[in-house]
Length: 420
Ligand code: PMT
Image 1 (cartoon, rainbow, N blue to C red):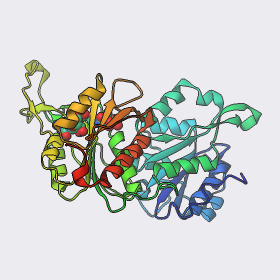
Image 2: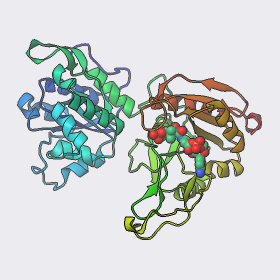
Image 3: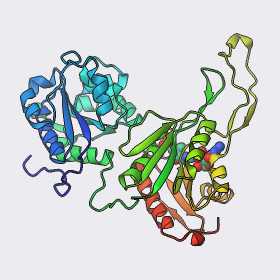
Image 4: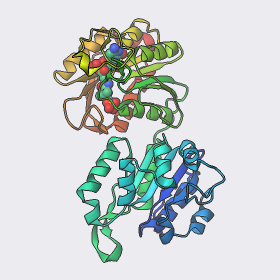
């Protein structure tokens, strides 16, 4: 473990961040001590939560001595009657290292039978899991499915290493080195590195995310598959690069460091929230999948099946981006165009029609791009006619490229910003 250090050139990179460090019962639990030390060295406030099994492998005293608070082990041994909600709410990030197959299974199934699993369910903060187990367990279909489910829900999983395991076996499933786990924490909290200065300091940005829900009756709605991941990544990166960031999202509650979140459901609510803020921002990024149509009238009571198939009359929702384009003064407007065919062509039409400065032409036809997944493929088109085709990127990486472009537009005098 000697040479394994996390970014020694970034002391205090996590100052002000509270990390709940969950430790479960595996032979590699001893490595969590080093993870804890590295997080504390980076300035994080670390609260260790050990499961009963973890306490068989590592001493509570060791963690209590290293961490910022004493070790918590139980839902009931505290003066605080609801420690899990307090921990979940105070956390900027919850990390579990090592995460056993049991922990993955319980978390994927929504089971909360101890302080750690209850905290995981009670938090809106980003979650990082570093699994460790025998190869046979790591490759078991149940575990593979649980990991896929958790990833789909936005949990960041640090792939285990391949190497020597308990009992002398060799294979995949060894807990990742502490520096890799801590690097994932830094990545999730979008801590700017020395090479990414806060170039958006002083810039006020508004980002939308998620799919709107247009009610049919009190229990049904017209919606879409947008998970909010793309918009949340854009807000997260903007804040990490110093922008004053507001996120209007249908996927709340969310807790992203440095981001003020506003929860909405419908296109009408999103339009009201965005237009209310428009005059006070420099950049708007519309990553939300706003419904184009909504039921003209939403039934007050649940529509009964026995009454037959209802005829639902639809009407258009407000086109928020077009309204922003019409009212645009010096703001930079970024739109997304979700397309499955003739991606560039359709996106270029929307760029002109909605008077945006930058259109992210998003290919949503492939399994690894667009809705719900962690990766995305896009072509950037700007109002001067320039375009850039990007490779498959993670949504956080794509967010970084978008902000690089927006930074260039912001540095261009308004009168020279293209023809829109
Ligand atoms: O949330 P994820 O699961 O991560 O998925 C990301 C995403 C696929 C939703 C995202 O990358 C994306 O492509 N968002 C735009 C989806 C969309 O509504 O595209 P559109 O081509 O229908 O709309 C064009 C633009 O007009 C968009 O910026 C949209 O926000 C905006 N719009 C659309 C309709 C409307 N009534 N008002 C709007 O402002």
